[in-house]
Length: 109
Length: 114
Image (tube, each protein chain N blue to C red):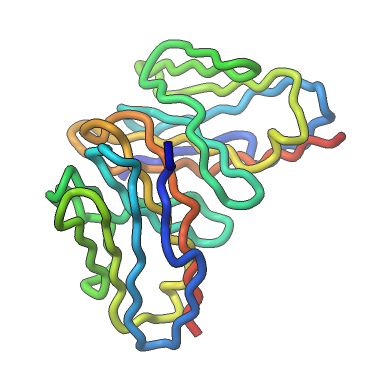
């Protein structure tokens, strides 16, 4: 089945720093989404981004479907950005979302 | 409006007991997903409903797992004869349309099987 690798696996930032998280797929994916799981376990949808670029405040994301990757940019990071970031997508013709391995982010005050 | 809710939030079961986990999706949402999340791992797909139809149950790990959504709104995930390896957080998510758009997750049910 499809493999979804995220990098880096762990990231520690000082408050105010910028970062880029990457999601690589072993095969073509559809319906790509980015999620943030906060320290209390709640998963929050950040972007639905099957292709192209979107921005929402300090966050932006880019998906290059033809090259099987997506990037999540976090600018001016805050301590509330801490948690685990997941990307997820489906393979063609299915509703089965495959989640990536996650990037664990810790932002220090 | 209200988000996705799940109950109970925590469940402790003795091995061999049956459990039922409930999900209340956002009102009007057509799609409903169940996921299992082990400690330190990403969510793993269990099953997908579009209204009352279960269109994909390929992720259910064994025939001890059963899910239903009889009226196209509330869903129940049932685990029969629980085993220790069933211990995990069970997450429910819903989306407005036919499964290929933004998903909204509930807080999860943490199941511990002793």
